Amino acid sequence: MQLSPLRLRLLVVSLLSVSFLGALDHTVVSTSLATIAGDLGALEHMSWIVVGYTLASTVLLPVIGKLGDLIGPRLVFLTSLLAFLAASLLCGFAPSMLWLVVARVVQGMSSAGLQLMSQTIIAHVTSPRERPRHMAVIGAAFPIAILIGPVVGGLITDHWGWPWVFWINVPIGLAALALAVVAVPHIETSAPRRFDVAGAAWFTASLVALVLAVTWAGDRQAASSAIVAFVVALLSFAAFLFVELRAPEPIVPLRLFANRTIAAGLALSAIIGIGLFSVTAYLPTYFQMAYRTSVTVSGLVPIATVFGMLVSNLVTGWLASRSGRYRVFAISGTGLAAAGLATMALLPAGLPLAVPMLVMFAVGVGTGSFMSLIVTVVQSAVSRSELGSVTASVNLVRQVGATVTTAVIGGVIAAGVAAALPSGFDAATLTPQLVHSAPLAAQSEIAGLYTDVFSPIFIGLAFTYALGVIAAVLLPAGRLPDEQGSPLDAEPLPA
Image 1: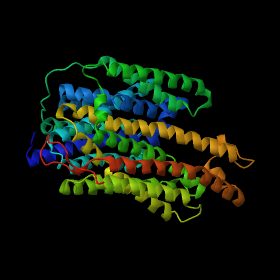
Image 2 (image 1 turned 30 degrees about the horizontal axis):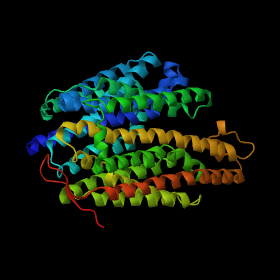
Image 3 (image 1 turned 90 degrees about the vertical axis):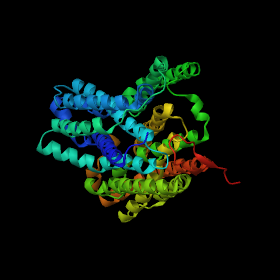
Image 4 (image 1 turned 180 degrees about the vertical axis):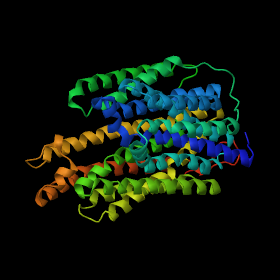
């Protein structure tokens, strides 16, 4: 389907606005959590404000992707936007933590629809050659939300009150809805097909159990619950595979994984979640302890990382649309990120903060160079009738990889610090403020401890990106085709 240049621009603006709302709602709440939990009198359940949103937005991806293929992405997109706005209203009016968590779950479900259908709609209305620059613009919503979300959330909470963190979505969302009704085209779907209810149920059960297991894994009191959840996840996933191999219309078409482009693309997408998204949350703590910075200053490193990702994402999207080349960006990007993370492992504590900022900026540049581009490449390897499903798969492996690895890294840090902490300090009550007020010798010892704990983590993540270089090399060499619906213009791999 070809749109006029004006309508295509309106469509991109609409999709960017809505994608930004969904991404921002994931980050803007972080600085308001303590205030919200205190007002609702449920500090012990504070984490579920985030966990409920993340869990819902992850597990519904394959279901929403399949629905987009069956009933059309326009209907799923508009329905998701209406549900998101309704859930935002309910969040702001929440009189209890249970109400808020349930509303956040609905927000997460609808947010998944917004993000996923935005990418799917662009795939339907543009050729593979045009797609990277448009996908890069929409993909910029996530890094921008990371950059400004916590600050916006803090300002709104301080000046208007925490309900407005959610209510601010409504006027912006209504404007985006009005634009979307005009700009998002009706996209014809293939003949009516059956929805794989059994596959969807087992897949959702396995992912819910897995996310809960990794969430509880770091809590000693919930260790038995984590083990049970892991067992349930394994059994549910086995049942899902059994069902999918026999389903006439599987929710996740397993045969697609035999396609080299799709398999390599999914591996690269997972590596982004495993190799970078997982560690970003821990970088401020690392610099507060190892470099003895303030809380505010420690945030500069993740900001530099995300800024590098944002710039690279936009630049490579534009370059890929001009040249049609995509493999070179994946190879160079994974290589640069691997080198950057290996360098982080070798940096001694006490260097000027500008040094790790520059290194992590390079890691962000490497990741951004193929972050949105790989979605386009994978979409170009399937028919129009499977765009929603394959786009969901790309996003799913990234989010699951980030969720699982975040929990693993948290456990490694907790165990490593507790095992080697100097006498007189308790790992359970250790804070940057406590360390900064300790004698210089103790500060230096703890700084060295955090450097020793994080070094193997950086090495492991660098190795993950090194595997990404192999996956990038396995992508078929060639150019993105100029015509919509054309297969990738593959060239033989060099000997």
